[in-house]
Length: 235
Ligand SMILES: C[S@@+](CC[C@H](N)C(=O)[O-])C[C@H]1O[C@@H](n2cnc3c(N)ncnc32)[C@H](O)[C@@H]1O
Image (cartoon, rainbow, N blue to C red; front, side, top):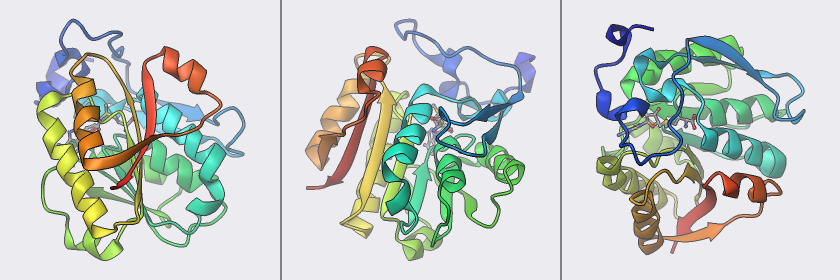
């Protein structure tokens, strides 16, 4: 892929990370991956990956961990939940949930910045999930749209959204806004620590929310990769 074809947002590019980040995500050529999460999905999810719109165009490790966790431990309750994914990239977590639940009582929202909208739409169509999943722009730190205010999400999914320090306060603001909107909501939050500053996000989150490390049989494996999995709820 030529560098000219990339998004003009180098601050959100995996290659824009400092050198102390380890390991850097590899740039892949665009293509479609099939995921069945060790058989947890009967029919595999197809995900098109294409980095031309930004770093969310490829699968990130926390997305894989969170998607599998939701399938393995929460499939039943998710059928009745009002689900919103933040920083969805290609939509891995939300689309996995939509594929894995035998029914969903409410539409499921996958959200990201405008550059990712077409990839989210593409992946919804690729999996024929248009009747269940809506792709929307949701910029962290900005007031929630009327559509999201009316939707009142009670289950928030966020994977690998901790990687760019200037965005930390914006993400925290949106998480706070969502918990103010629905005080009983649960945020499922998975991230990979790549540098010391990432733990500053967690420190701020602990001040703002009740942060709980949640059980997962894969924890010994993903912990070794510096992946963290929590729920955030209102204090
Ligand atoms: C590292 S990617 C993770 C993508 C996906 N959740 C996964 O795990 O594969 C982070 C995502 O956050 C999105 N993002 C970054 N800053 C954002 C902001 N200010 N508002 C909304 N989304 C943002 C990026 O566009 C990107 O898709």
